[in-house]
Image 1 (cartoon, rainbow over the protein chains, first blue to last red):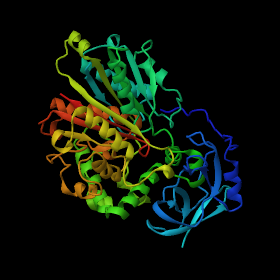
Image 2: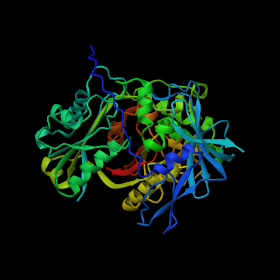
Image 3: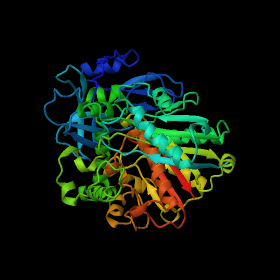
Length: 131
Length: 387
């Protein structure tokens, strides 16, 4: 015998005040990393504070990257049902940072270019294109 | 101050539609108390390990604690993703080593099957850094390990067949373990022909979604003497480490740095420089077949890059140089997150006592190794047990 629980739905409002530059950048086709003016540490995902205490500045992730890992998701999680077919999550290295994005037909070692786009749910994100 | 394990237990793993989380926990607690020959009155502290992000009981420690008869004795709730079990054992261990308790029980309990699979995947996919991973890219937990598999295959030539061999071994062992979720053998073809979950991982590369509980009772050497317990498995050493939440902040995808660091710490403290020779039985965190292959390398059973070949060699089978996951692994026994690490203690203690029946390994060093990973190498614990 089972008892059905009361339904609980959670929708969070996530503050992105400190990384607003990044989120706005995606809408302009730009992908930003954070670089510390003091120690030179580069952060992706970007953050507004360096652990050394130095001030960070925003710099674009540009040029060609190299695919280091990927997976094509066939068993799709709740929240992505709208994507009716498998999607490929890729991690690529661009100099001192690694970036996650969606790509098609990639393999490890491929050279790729970075771009941004909006998915069907209106979420802006990183996409890679094989060079 | 030496700390010993005086009682262990493990519930049947699998789909447990017959029990709530607290009832499931009590199954293990009762059995562990019987195993130690003590009662709740002898226990100073209960540590409740439970991730329980799939459960309706959002703060499970208190209901579990009450149901198990420990109201007034704690509880401490511990969470370290899939390494919650080892983290609970570590917490019990340190509370005794620091003389804050004489006897402590580590309970690991998880109910994972009360929600549907798509919801379960969406929860596991949040085991990283939500806003930068799941929110945008729909990461899943198998997906994180699949990315490691893609990197390992590209760099070292590791094959889908080698991964399948890990699954075949797991199922062969689990078939003889009455506590296992899957008690049936599979063939290499079954594994290789199973459907793709997240390329390159297929169904049989993945541990199932299971319910389960386990408990381990730890006590100080002094208290063990006082209680008149003479068959004790001692915790010889413990190592712990962690790594970045964001996958993009990692240096490499062909291994888990947290495992390497935790193993270094545990080996140094136990004086181990050649685990294959100095350990009789190892339990490694094989939530996915690629995880076991990387564990062989990161735990120094073989050189980096040779994990696939080591899986092929048969040296990790029963009767091999270093039998690994003779209980069927997370892969086939099941992986109820918080129960897993505590259940590893149960399996090691059973082996070191010589009580593992058909799955018994040969004891030369009377030493067992535990390796429990949380998330995708977000947490790692390595522990050495000795009888």
